[in-house]
Every structure is written in C-alpha cells, then in structure tokens.
Amino acid sequence: MPVRAVTFDVYSAMFDTVGGLTGALTAFFRTRGITADAAATGRAWRRAQMDYLLLANSLDREPASNRAAIEASARHTLRAFAPPAAPPREGGVAPAEMDALVAAWERLPAWPEAAEVLADVRRRPLPLGVLSNGDYGMLDALMRTFPVRFDRIVSVEGGKFKPHPSVYRKALTEMGVPVDDLLHVAGSPSDAAGATAAGIRTIWINRASDAVLDPRFAPAHQSSDLRGVLALL
Image (cartoon, rainbow, N blue to C red):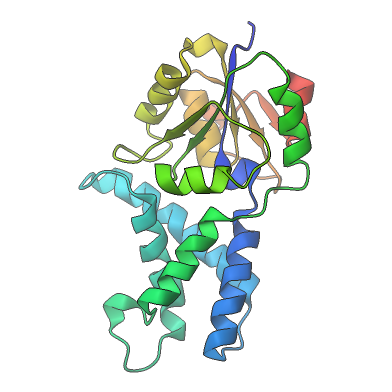
C-alpha cells in the first residue's frame, strides 16, 4: 500500500530529549552548587515524565497536559536535592528554576541525522506531521528551531496521552488519510505499540535496541536511526 502521509514522534524519534534535559540540569546543579550526575538525573526525569503520562491516562481525571507532566516529574526527580526547609509538595524547585527547566523542552537538540533525513522526506509529495504528547505551544516553539517545515502539529493536549487509541485516530483525521495510507515514525516502545495496535504502518526508531512489552504489538519495521525511514519510503 502506498504511503500518502507521514507523522513523526518528537521527543524520542526526532530530538534527543535526555541530552537536552542533561544540559538544563547541569546549569541547575551548577547554580545550586550541587555535585551530581546530570545525565543520570536527566534519564530519571524522562522516565518519571513518561510514567506520569501513563498514570494520567489510567486515572482519567483531567485532560492531557505535558507541561503538568514535566513539572510534576521534575519535582519528583529533584526532591532529593531540595533544601531541608523546602515544602515537599514543591520539591524545592523555585518558580524561576522550574521555568528554566520547562524551557529546555522547547530547545532540545535534534538527533544528528534528523535534519538531513527530514529534508529528504520533505522533498517528496507527502504531507508531514508531528504526532506528540507535547502541548501545542511547546511543540510549536520546538519545531521552529528545526530547519524543515511540517504541515501539521498533532498534539494530544486536552485529550489523552499516547498510546491511547484516540491519539492515533486524531492523527488520521488531522492528516486527512485513511489508516492504510499513514506511516508513523515512533520513538518509544509505547508509541510503537500504540500506533501498531491502531493498525497504522509503523517504523520504530529503536536507538537502544529495546523491545515492546507485548510482542503482539511489535511494529513491522525498526531502525537504529531515522535513516531507516528513507529506506522504507
């Protein structure tokens, strides 16, 4: 079946989220005079943020907000570095510090091959979209730092987080194609499984040689970096 539109995951497939968070945390620790492993803390923050998304979907109490997930997971991750007198609920992170940490999500570094691969894809007569758990405004700010133009920003804001089926139905609606015509470029195991379960042709950019938890929803295609998209197209 022909591919008539392509969507890309943002925070894992296109951008090095942990690398960007590591830089922000390095500055945070330097200001605080803290000696800690910023890279390990960045990985922990990213894991906590993704755990928040799955918990929010399960509890079903409020519309999706990635900013809320980012702030809650930052406080949770940094609670060990809070001053003794800091209120536990705030995790010891001052408002200005939190603003700086959140802003890091709007200037993440792209993976080394991302610009070249996406420029190649952009030359083809295919609508391109990003499909992300990010809030629309934050995604718009981040994508403005990227040199390739996208036709659509499909955000889950106000709905459910990936891998909820409604996310992938929204992508099909906004991209204007039936399920057989969309290629989704996933960046995480849960996204790869969610898109595959929704019946969407999926390639997982599996940089860590990971595996989906339920093999029934393993995607048909995998690649160690974004160049695999070109081979598939």
